[in-house]
Length: 146
View 1: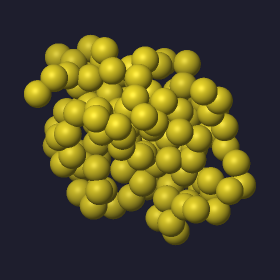
View 2: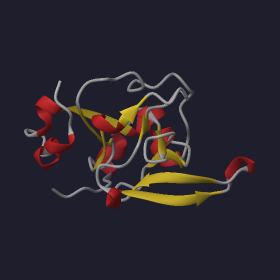
View 3: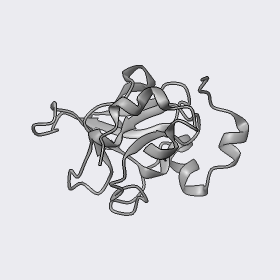
């Protein structure tokens, strides 16, 4: 499967999704549609469709944003030094869609040390039952069984 950013995909974004993915914005803590999602599946870039995170690596960090221990495919996530807002952080962007996803922090507390703090607005969730039909079957082995 080829993953890329297209004008058509960007045109379909809501104002919030565009603000986050294209303008580097952040949704308000606790407001993301996927924050409390506990269904098995995979999280993909809302723009390019590239696989980013698995539900089995998602956890409640108490920060108000979906948090993950690691990307499902490391090459699909770019980490960039971010010195905005008077602090030094590591921005996380999708490699093929160039979407702003959120930030990664080294405070994962017993979960490999990493906390990928990701905006729901940058993600599309694909349920385990739909993964094969949508072309993500190669990642089924990374999704937990109920």
